Amino acid sequence: MRELGVVPYAAVLCVAGNIVSVGTTRDALKDPWIKKNKRRLTEIDCGGRVVLPGFVDSHTHPVFAAPRLVDFEKRISGATYEEIAEAGGGIRSSLAAVRGAGKSQLSAEVLKALRKFTAHGTTTVEAKSGYGLSLADELKSLEAIRSAARDWPGTVAPTLLGAHVVPPDFQGRADDYVDLVCQEMIPAVAKRRLATSVDVFCERGAFTEAQSLKILAAARSHGLSVRAHVSQLKRTSLERLLALQPLSLDHLDFVDENDIRLLAKSNTVATLVPGANYFLGLREYPPARKLIDRGAAVALATDFNPGTSPTASMSFVLSLACTQMRMTPAEAISAGTINGAWALGLADRKGSIEPGKDADLAIFDIKDYREIAYWFGSNLCCQAIANGVPVIPAAD
Ligand SMILES: [Zn+2]
Image (cartoon, rainbow, N blue to C red; front, side, top):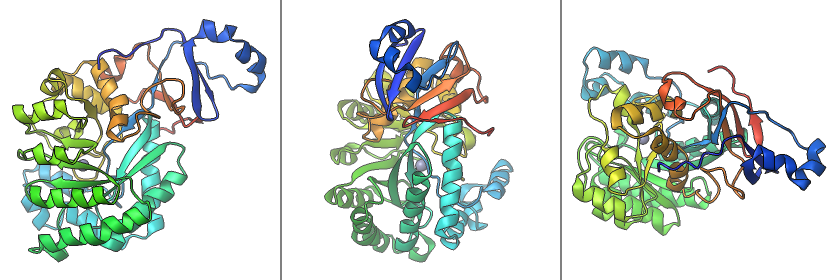
């Protein structure tokens, strides 16, 4: 993760949305094909700047209708999660708004978020449903993601998170809701190809380990990849979850030595989302250093969502990773690019600047890649290229 393969004075040649060659500018200028086709090429001068693979944000919840500002203020004045929920805030307020919104309204919100992601240099985004929590509202959310993705030049990996929490209409009947997810939502989503993976919130107050395993097994039987939110509030044993070969396990604040050993042995990516720890004002962060040193593949993601991490900035997440979790700037960049691509099962196309991969690049107005995590709070991305399409970010 510490070896970025930096090429000084580099040039990247992209044709028809793909990276064709990577090397030095001097070699590129001597290339006979480039000489011959010079007039047909569009040249983007990145002199004195840093070009990275576009960020791969492998964990986001972009399908919501409004920010949760009242919750934000209440938490600052000391309200607990339960008190916020009792006052009609928390996930329930997002639920009511998503259920009441039309598909085109939701799709416009998702597109707005996707544009924000590109403005910060992100060209691939995983996008979860999970604020509908009924068959119709989860399908509506995934359709909103699909329609927004069509209007965005980047790549979206959609995920069904029907098992986010037990919705109020199923209170006290969690197992009935799990059956609805397994028997109706997953088959419908698989049939319509609305998602490539299924996620579950395996956590106190959400779904038990047994319920989570049931949901993920149903997803696997329908040919979908699986991932899970785990060990954010308290430890869950990872052994049985890992047996289902999830692409990623996310959060991991409370993993123990045995969990870390199992993760290191597996092909599952450990996705850390320190933006949530920051926004909730937590002192503790996930043990990135231990995970990396023991050999686990660590990815970083924003966890973009209205309740606990309303940021689309991978640069800020990378900065948190360096200052709060002692990842090196190089490790943070690997975690936000190639490891994110592995977490989405897209490492053959995304996450690094190599011939044969998609032309996803982010250009930063800096001289050294370490500045991305250093100048925290600034967006230094001046242009992104997503699947070969140049995107000049609007001011965010
Ligand atoms: Zn999440």
